[in-house]
Structure formats: structure tokens, C-alpha cells
Amino acid sequence: MAMEICILAGGRSSRMGRSKGSLRLAGKTLLQKTIQIAREAGLPTRVIRRDLVPECGPVGGVFTALKQSQFEAILFLPCDMPFLSAELLTQVISEARAQQKPIFVNGDQGAGFPFVIWKKDLPLVKASIEQGKFALQHLAKTVSAGVFRRADPNELTNVNTPKDFAEAGKRQMQIDQLRDETILSIKNLTIIRGKSRILDGITWNIRQGEHWVILGANGSGKTSLLNSLVGYLTPTKGTVNLLGRQFGSTDWRELRRHIGMVSSSLRQMMTDSEPALDTVVSGKYAMIDFWGKPSASDRKEGVKILKQLECEHLAERPWIYLSQGERQRILIGRALMAKPRILILDEPCAGLDPAARERFLQFLQNLGRLENAPALIFVTHHVEEIMPLFTHVLLLKAGKVLLAGKKDTLNGRAVSELFSAPALLRKSGERFELGIKVDKPMAEPKVAIAKNSAQTRMKNR
Image (cartoon, rainbow, N blue to C red; front, top):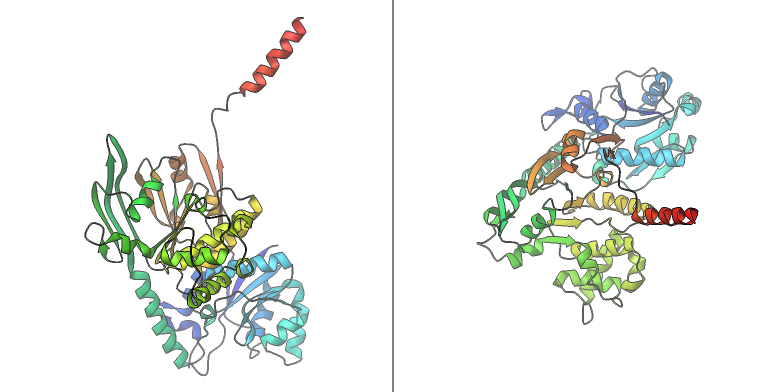
């Protein structure tokens, strides 16, 4: 389905005394911020500055955009929602394509922005205008729209009055301060064991609000880097600082409680008979095989986490009866019980079938958008697993940093060097696809050779 994004920026706000799109927040106008978010969603973007039918509110802009569009559907954005995210737009687009119908996000006032309307619904929009009905609630009902309910209310903040604008400015300052806060700082980290240089001069910083993917082939140093973060590997030289405290001069056993880790080795240590709720609660005490009975407060907190993970129905189910995907979610809940600042996911999709993997990745996308979510470090071999929520990538090869930066710096040349093979990196929406060209095909399996040899002997007889 061909789709574009239209930003409604026409008209002057009587309460603000000017166009809301011209208001400046963090050095950019609200319209500039909206355009940037729309482009991150990966669709053609257009700004509607003047309505064909004036004084009809946003419905006039919808009519104008549909009348002029060559696309099958349009995702509509206002210019006065400065905290919308590209991730939310991507989800709404996916929902509209899946349901093949208009979709409105459900906000505090009911149906609202952002929303998708079909080109074929233009006559219905025109009828609403002729009837003098300009409310988005009525428009959503008229076009028989579906409802998207999973949006973060903070993203749907409107700037309608001077008070709203002042509050948005305060919130933007808080966001900027959190973004600038450094959680983890690694400088020139080098680990040598015997004659092997395992890590070689690693420098890496993680700030609040960032989510990282670590990519690397087997033997690249990924596991050693993770072990150095939690203090299981002592650096030969260099420094590791977590929350402003340095490894070697702080009790790291206490500090590592701020780092949650989910790995295959942990999954194998769980007791078959342990209920999922007990497994989650055990994370608070860093225990394996939780003994005793969870306190009422621990149980309440554990149930709250299970609800966030959409696993409340698994609370009493023993570990042995959980699927691989369910086990990964429960282990994440276990890590969240300790309220970590960083959550490390070490190849969490290993062993999942394609459908289970995609369900888990979508779950992870929602997890990263929870309020007070920890910074995520996701370790994988597969670029296809890089979800829109991830902001940065770290490429490791032979113990050295090949690339560290924002996700949009990832390119085919770097991936080719990473895996020592020609690679074609493509972007499909907000996801990556990778093709690897192998110059030399694998040798014919020995079992096939033996079979052919046996057939030759039979013929010779």
C-alpha cells in the first residue's frame, strides 16, 4: 500500500497569537521537529500550509491533503505535538496496513493524531465538512476507523495554549538533561590473557535514552566486553565507569546490581519446577532457584512487571512448561525486578523460530518505550533484529571497535568488513535486511560422496 505523511500546519492559533508550527523548542520550530520525526519514519513527507476549505479545523487539512495526494493512504500529523516518535508512527503505519482500514490513535480525548485515512474516503471527509462536523471523533466514526491503543500518553502532548508551551519547554529540558547523562563510560579498555589480546583499546559511552546494538562475528570480543562491564574480567589497562564510579575503586558487587543481564547460560540454570512469578522476584535478590515464599510487596511488584511484559497469565506456570520466547520475557522481568539502569540482552533470539523471534522483537520494541526503561544493550549476529527503538550500534571485530555511533551510520561497507564477506545492506521501512555473497561454495557433504561411491561400485558389478 503506497502511503505518504502529511503535516497539517495551516492557520493561525488565536490562543497562541501565531502559527503553532513557528514556535521554537530546543532550537527548532515545532514544524521542523515534526518534519524530522516524519522523515525518520521513512515515508514521503508533505506539509499542508493552506487548506482548500478554510476554517474547518484539521478536517479542512485532511480534505486538502486527500484531494491533492497521489497515494492510496495518508498518515496525518499535526505541527503541535513535539514529543511524537518515529517508532509510534511506524507502529500506526503497520497497523493500518495490517487491518487495511483507517486507524486513529486513542488519546485522552478519544480518537486523535496521528491517524491514517484512505484516499478513497475523500467523499466521506467532504460530507463531514458539508454537514459542519469538524471533530476528529466524528471523522473517525464516519470512515469506520480502527483504534490504536498502545501509544505513550506523553507522546501525544498538544501545544494549544501558552501554558502548554511552557510545560513543553520544561519537559524538553528534562529530556535533554537525561540524554546528556552518561551511564557507562569505557576508555581504552584492553584485556590481555597470556599472548592473546582479547580486547584492544575499546572506548565507548552510553547516555541516558540511548539503546545500543552490539554486532560482531564469533570471537570478536562481545562476551569479553560484557563480562568486563559486570566485573567478571579485570582490565589489563583502561577504565570502566558506571554511574560515575570506576571499576577497581568501588565495590563492583554492589554496583553490578544496576546492570541486568539475560543470557542463554542464565536460562539453563533455572529450576524446572519454579513458577514464573518466583523467577521474576528472585531478580531482586540476585538468586537462582528462589527459596522461601515471596513477600506480599515483592509479589505485588512481580505481578506489576509481568503485566508490563504481557505475561501476567504465566505467573504460576512452572519454568519447564514455558516456551523459549516466554522464558526470555520472564528472564527480562527477573532483570527488571532489580530496577537496573542498563539491561544487557545477549543473543536473546537464539533458538527462537521465525514467528517467535518476531513476536519477541515486537515485545522488545514496546519494552524500550516504557517509562523509566533501562538503557538496552542488545547483542546479536543479525542486522534483521535491529528494531526501530535502537538508537546506536557498536561493531566489534577482533577485539577492536570497527564502528560506534548512531544507527544511521551503519552501512554495507562496515558490515562487509565486519563479517569479512561482501555484504548488501538494505533498509526496509525501519528494519534492515542483509545479503552476504559467498565466493567459494561449501564442499560437497561427505555422506553424499560415500553414497555416490557405493552406487559406482554397484554399477561396476
